[in-house]
Every structure is written in structure tokens, then in C-alpha cells.
Length: 272
Ligand code: LER
Ligand code: MN
Image (cartoon, rainbow, N blue to C red; front, side, top):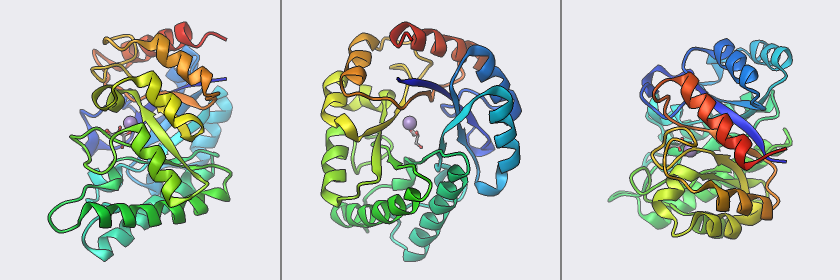
């Protein structure tokens, strides 16, 4: 069964970014529970910014899970990248992601590597960047294994990375690096830019699809753009996807409206 989730950002530097809730964990969990979401995805400045006890208590109080933890603050706040030319920066980036894997582990939630993958450039060739990224994904995927969660790798659209931009590229890459514990994040916003056909792409990803960012064509909440959700929902059912469809969307016109649209669209396409 596909489950619903919604994002909360605790990262001030990411203001204006595509996260639905912005007013702290207690507010996010209360509102998510009221609307009937299954889980919350947490975008945090770092592990020290999140009280493990508070999150466990909020999960118990509201009968919610943590869907995933984002690691993008490593880039947005600390300027780190897993493919930086400096070995020292790459090591710090890996340590940051590892600490977020450990944070998520407390809640049986996987960590997501999105913007932390970085880009290739004049100083780091595409081949080298993909080699470094692959080694890191394998190592950190193994680290995540002790928590019984995968590591989630997210292909991004061409304006955010020049490494891997489609689900097919991501799937081929994960096969080539041979890590059994890394799965793909299919973000419908990025896919709407890069894929010829979103449903076909999800089918090509198959069992490699481990998380979904559930969002509309304009990165507003599901139902507020022109995404055609029927074939997407059918494809997710066909591949037996039973992870989260998580709202990573702009809080437009406000968080409450974005959340309501998301859950309405989710229930329409994934009736229980
Ligand atoms: C970034 O565009 C994104 O989609 C996030 O999920 C990754 O940091
Ligand atoms: Mn995303």
C-alpha cells in the first residue's frame, strides 16, 4: 500500500524552497495528523538540530512515522558536496550524510541524497564525479543497512545537477555500482522536466524506486498544476511500490492549502 507523507523544513537558509511546513516539528506533526497523512519527511540543518526524543514522542502522539530525512542542508547550509574537488570537503560531506543516516535510523527512516550529489565541472570530470559518488553510495548504503533502511539517491533535473537526471539513468547507475541497499527517489517535479513519459520511467525503475516526491508540474502541491496522475498511480501500482508519496512542494498559497490539496489528490489516486 502506498503511504502519504509531507515535508517540514527546519532550515532557515532554505526559505522559499519546496517544503510544505516551516513552523517546527510540533506544528508539522499536528497538522499532518489532522489531515490524515501517514508520515512526515524532515529537512533539517543537521542531526544536532533534531531532538530524537521529541520526534519519537510526536510520532507516538500523532500515530505518524518519519518517511525520510533530507541531507540537502549539507549543501545549502554548509557548502558540502559528495563530488567536490577537495578530498577534505568530500570527506565532510560523507560524514554529514552518515550523521543524517544515523539520525533517520532512530526512526527507521532512510536518508535522501539529492543536492549533495553535486555536479561535474572543469576540475572534476563526469566520470570521476560518478566514480566518487558511486563509492560513497555503496559505503553509505551499507551503513544504512544496520537500520533496516535503504539509502535513497535522487536524480535531479538538469538545472540542479548534470550527473544523472532520469530514472532510467539512475537505475542503470545503481545496477552498475552494485549496491543492494541504495534505491531511487522518483521526484515527479524533476521527472516532469526530464522524462519523455513519467509512467514509463517509473516502470523502468521498477523495484529500484524506493521513495516518491509527490508534487505537481509547477512544484506546487499535487492537484495545483497540470500533472496527469492517473497513469503515474497505475504505474506505481504495477511495479508494486509500497513506499511513501511525499509532498515536497512549495507552500503556495500557504502550507495549509498545499497540504489539503496534496492529501485530496493522494486519496483520489490511491484510494484505500
Ligand atoms: C531538490 O530539488 C530536491 O528535489 C530534493 O528532494 C533533494 O534535495
Ligand atoms: Mn525531491
